[in-house]
Image (cartoon, rainbow, N blue to C red; front, side, top):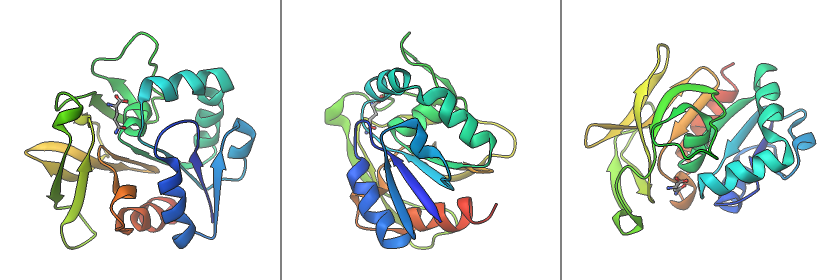
Length: 192
Ligand code: GLN
C-alpha cells in the first residue's frame, strides 16, 4: 500500500511518522506527479489559505481530482478537511475547495487561536475515547447522503467518512495514538 502526505505546508511530518510505522510505503508529496500510484493521500492541517495557494501554483487541484477519479482515497485533517469539502462556509475568495467530499465545513468555528483545546471524543468503530486536539478548528456543518458521522464534540460534527473520503477537524497526528491513521488505512483505503 502506498500512502502520500501532501507536504506543502502544515503538520505533514507528523503524519508521515505515524504512517511510516503503519503503512508499507509513505511518500511526502511535493509535486503532482508523485500522486501517481498512491492508494491514499493525507491533506494535513495547517493554514488552508496557504495550502490552497500552493496547490494552485503547483497544479494540484486537477491532479488530486484526477487521482481521486481513479480511486485514490483522501483523509483531510483540519485545514485538509476544509480543502476537501464540497463547500466552505466562510471561504475567502482565494480559497477554492477541492469538492471531493459531500460536506460543508465552517472555518475557525471556535474563534481565535487561543480557543484551541483538547477533548476526549467518542469516535465510532475505534473503541475507547480518542484524544481530540483542536487547533483553530473548523467543524462540519452538514454531511450529504452516504456520509457517516464518526464523531461529534458538543453536538458539532468533527469526523465523517463517506466512500473513499475521511475528514477530521482535529489532529490525530499530534497525539501519539495511531488509531485514526489505522482507520484510514484499514477501513477507508483497504475497504475499497
Ligand atoms: N484555521 C485553519 C484554517 O482555516 C485550520 C487550522 C488547522 O489546520 N489546525 O486553515
